[in-house]
Length: 329
Image 1: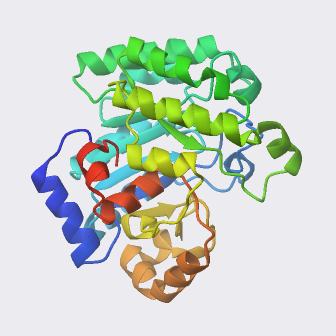
Image 2 (image 1 turned 180 degrees about the horizontal axis):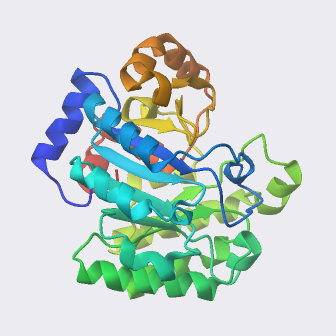
C-alpha cells in the first residue's frame, strides 16, 4: 500500500505465508461495460450480474477466509448504482478497498466513492486515447480532475492512472507522466498483453512491434522514476518490462484470487480455467480442492508482465527495492 502499516503487513504475511491463502480478492463486480475496447475480452462475456445480497455474502465469505483487500474491477464497476453500498459494506468488514474504472462515468459519480481507498483509472494515451478507447480524452480528464479534487478533500490516497504500453501510445508516455505530476496523481505502466482470444488484426494495430523504441521509452520511465516523478512501479519491475523478461517465479495466485461476476474462481486474469464456484461452495472448499490444479496451471503458464501480478511476485520473493518502494497492492 502507499504507506507501510506493520499490522497490515503482518496480517498479509500470516495469510499468505502461514495459512497459504490469498490476501486480495479481485472481483468481477458486474458483467457489463459501457465501452467496447477491441483489445479487451471482458465486455464480451455478459453473464449474470450478482445481486447486492450475493456480493455481501461473497464479502462475508471472503472476510472469513482471511481476505484483507477487496478490488472491484473487470468490466465497469461504476455501472452499478449500488456500488457505494457495496464498498461501504466491504469497509465495514475491515477490508481495504480498491477499484479500477475506465473513467467514463467518473465525473458524475466521483463524489460517491468515499469508501474506495485506492482508485485506479485506465489512461492509455492523450492524443491517441480516442483511437484506442473510443472516448474523448477531455471526457476522461474532466472525470480524473473531479475525482482527484474530491479525494484530496477526503484525504484519500492519490488517484492512480494506469497506462498499458502499446504500439499506439509510446510517443505519449512522457506527456502522461508530466500530466500525472501536474494533477498530483500517481501513474503506473504495464505492457500490452496479447490475449490469444482477441483477433490478430487488433494486435497488428496495437501491439508493440518496434522493440528498440519500446526499450527507449521504458528506459525514460525509469529515468523519470529516479528523478522523483510519481511513478509507482518499482525499477526492478520496469527493467523486467524493458527486457520482456518473464524469468521470475510467479506467486500471483498465492496473493490474489480472481473471481468472476458469476462466482467462478480463477488463478489469474491470464488463466481462465475455473477452479470452482465460491458463491456456491465458499472460498475455503474451492481453495482446498483446487490445490493441485492451481499448481499445474502455474507450472504450465508462459508468464505475463501485468504489473500487479509481477510486482506482488517480486515482493513475495523479498526483492529489496520492490519491498521498499512499491506502493500499490
